[in-house]
Length: 287
Image 1 (cartoon, rainbow, N blue to C red):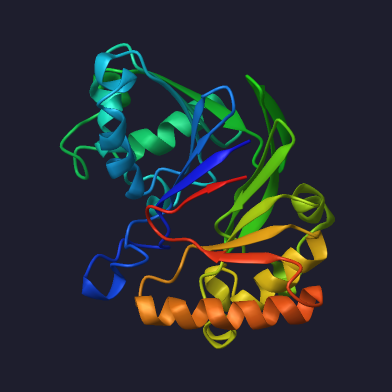
Image 2: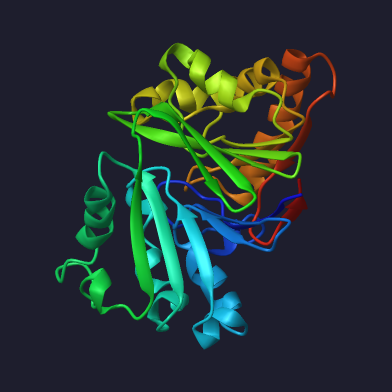
């Protein structure tokens, strides 16, 4: 069993304000707790800041916390919350960060880059109190690592001019796939990606755009809901969770996006065979 909580569901840039209060304006961050009570965090967008604050009342506040962060790629909306994640300032907390790169030092360099004195009042990971370890996941995907009772696999996904990773987490018979940024060529995922998604209990997937906006902004490397519905149906997932909404979409826009995605998903999957949820900050699901 996996307990999944959404702390940031927005794409590209944080979008606070009265028009985004129901779904939230923080950028990508999802917390996953396993059956053996281990904590994993998917991406470190601005949502990780409030997540970190919620952890400080327990082991992380005493310097006894341990967490693994899985980064999909180094765009700022997926890492910009990390320097403000409260547990990293507490000595003896242990933070392990996996990210797509050819070496551990490159993962470290991505995080160090945004802590340059021109951008950050706190310079260098070495000045943080926690024990921080950076580890590389093959950029081309296909990597696999076992973390306690959790099996983690990855696949490479096109994302504009770069690639991003999709992760699959398997634990105690439960499977979760996280793919927040995906600009498939001609809307068609690779066999490797479909294999990673295959039969997952839950797929958290990029739903940045309407079909019309997706066509107009194709070069940005995101998915529109028609592409995502087709991918979910082809992969035979049990549940699709919409994620990574465009920063300009209001709560009403996301409501309409979800309703339209339901119709598209039914057409692709043949009825309501796939459960659909629209991610929002504070939502917790059990997989």
